[in-house]
Image: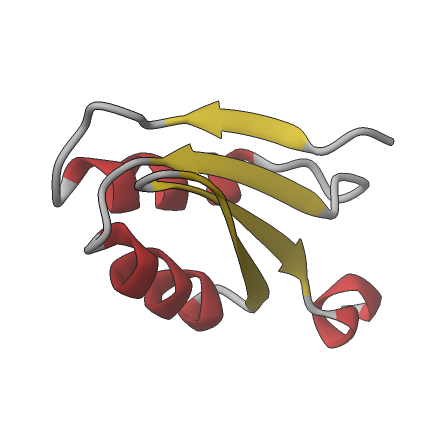
Length: 81
């Protein structure tokens, strides 16, 4: 299944983190990955912190000058619950 995508480019804190948390809470049980695209560097700290609190792990990849893709994946333990 392709990851759900959320584009928060052009938005500044706290909106990228707030929209990401909302999207994570709306993921169905069979959806494992949320892909977030951002151009706001502070989101690289706030999004992984909040995702971890919800039981997700993150992988950050720089995709261009001042643009990143954050892959947020449901932890295995959370899937079995």
